[in-house]
Image (tube, rainbow over all chains, first blue to last red; front, side, top):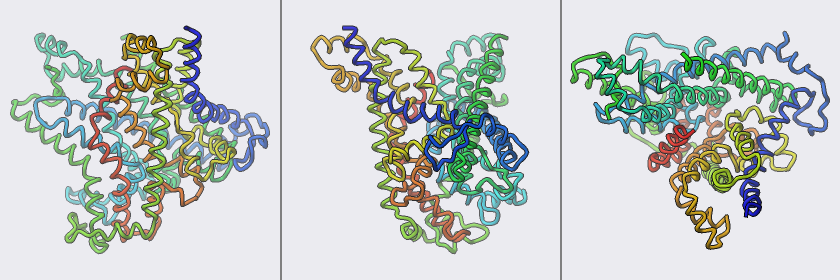
Length: 296
Length: 287
């Protein structure tokens, strides 16, 4: 009997394991291997020649390759941090708005918020490129109504990256709101009743019950938000092409430009490895931080 | 339920609190809906209206001219068809591979099971750019580049699907499966005739997620197609609208194109949002 099911397990697993093995795990190992090679993306893998850590020296070096990569790494870090800083608190506030029962319309609000998550990023980029348009764009018109002068948005190196962060927050916050609601439904109502009996006001209930019990949800949300943020590509590829003056040159865009368009496969792979390592470090740090808080 | 969630608002008279909360909720909803409403309205404007400063909010004489013009710039019918083919076949593949693997992880015991599961799940957290360069070369070397097959084949299985299916299939009672085995049913028959119907909502959710994700997907098709316009999905065709006739004149055109690409995933969501939301909640809580 046992053997029969072992064979069945093999058959059931074979398609998924083969596909993920060939198209995800193998390429991941190849990325690591290629990062130590001199290799053009237009040639077979067999043309690669080992050059040790040269790719890594180059992407962190003083030449234009190094400057561009370090710029892209910094831009991605800023973009990711800002996205998480905006998305997490907003998702909790919106989640509370949907979850409360004092005012009707929570479910309708959830529908509106989550709908933006269904919109293809390319359409988001197209629409926001017009919303941000300096002269005839509606955002500057509305700012004008409340007495704020026209903003350059995507056309100035100082505001371009943050403008793309806003676009990302707008698209993604609905998804994280639903995650926050899922977390809120897990908090037992009896805790609030007990707190009320002890005389805790609403703010204290939020501070000492809601927020601590949402920690696991928020940790999960932060990890997903980080992984989503480093994938930003469409608005940059479509609207800014990394500019003005490199201010929106983020890693996904830069790695593709180097590794595919310029066919510098070794250099691009070294950059991809650095991205992977950075993500591992950031996520481990996040977990360590959350667990430290746990022990308090 | 007494989990009161307007806790973060300052304390006021109850009616004042409610009015404030309702106003805030309305503001959030308007801000969230505004870009899409503006997109649809702008797609109906005449070119003269799109250029006007200050802008015209509601088109005076709504016209579908912009939609007609989109068809002149890009092959809308062909691109929509390509998107449909890509999203449908990929979704079918993901459903099949995820159900099979999810069943194995939920109901079989085999050596190194948890190790294999962790290895697969880890790929869920891998941003696609990390594997893009070798994958591009790999797909090229098996002759699938610049084709729809090249877009589809690498995506026929994914970790999220396996994870979701395992979570839900674990909840199917073993007795049900054992009874079918006693009757001599094969494992595949059990999976499709007994297990699948009892996790139908999860399958629907996965199907919707996969369909929308692969309808919207941009980076991989752009990379693998390398300019083969015949195989462009709608999201890639759209990106050509922005470079066409740069300037305010093309706002209506761009918005019409964006509206066309948004409609299929948005309609699916509006009619089936229960499944979307349930599966996110399910995967977050059980995870």
